[in-house]
Length: 485
Image 1 (cartoon, rainbow, N blue to C red):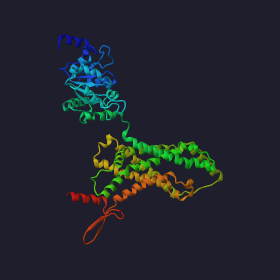
Image 2 (cartoon, rainbow, N blue to C red):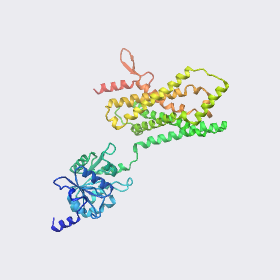
Image 3 (cartoon, rainbow, N blue to C red):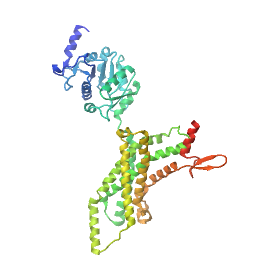
Image 4 (tube, one colour):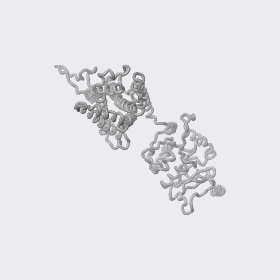
């Protein structure tokens, strides 16, 4: 470096901290460079300083840069590029042009591209690939783009600890992984730079696994809301002239929530049952499921959590029933009427049994419901073995479905025998919601039914009663394993 270049670098260098807090020299700590003094660049620089790195910011106007972390230096782009081997590019793609004149200074350096786009497919190629085409002499690595400035400032947590990287050079990626590890992050190598577009699309995704479950939940809620609105509210107004529209807020909502909850809980376990029968039909477990079934099985967790949310709403709506004005008014009116007429009524033991059983099954079902939701949390499921997780989500899951279905059957009891139940010849909503869980439980019962053998002098043929197969699921797996041996 010539004397003139040294003087220029010295003139561009501005310390942002007092002299007693000067940045350590490269001999004391490793230096890294950050191009970009925006929110993301400043937050990343702060985290790097806290991890013990020496941080140099590259800026077009080093003398006017402010609000940078204490302990960092700010230089011109050329001087900053020469000061460190690892350079973080925390600027948007449209501002990459300033890197072209720095080709000589960036030669052999590792450039970490942190940029993202406003929308998918905004450019014909990934930002990291475009950066590599501009600076061919450098090694470009895509990484840290899934972290926000807020998460960097507040430190790592379970929600923002994972970072993805990709690049062509193994050594360059290892250098970036080392920095991520020192920052308390977990880095995952996704491969070559061609994966950069996929990584840049990650921050643009909005609950990708929740879209289908949310559509199902919204569709079921809307369908049953309008169905019950016609049966309960409009029917009373048309046939009796009563205006009971106030029931929409609580009574109608308290019918829709348990109906949707039970159906969505059934949808969590229906694909597993269908998959078992499909394997039996094919005679093998080594063929891929259809795409629609595979997609359905992958979103069962989201279906279950939404079902739990509707169950919570049902519980809350039920708890406020005694304090509703309509209920208090009716209760007082009934009490006054009984006193005036001097009437008494006998205690019905059967009704008491049905009422207590209905409430007890509801409480037990909701308790297991909550247990399923808790074990689906990553922090809890990671502490369970596969057998424990399978026991809770499968065995206790089907028990939860059984209890909630029985709870609904006891709610209906013998009302289906009354003609007044079928308003405008339509069944009540709770009867419709019992169809799917009953089918799921029946199919599951067929799968777990023990085999009964038919023996003659020649062979033993396993079968399951009236199943349309010549073997049951346990026998099929035993036979399959023996054949493999």
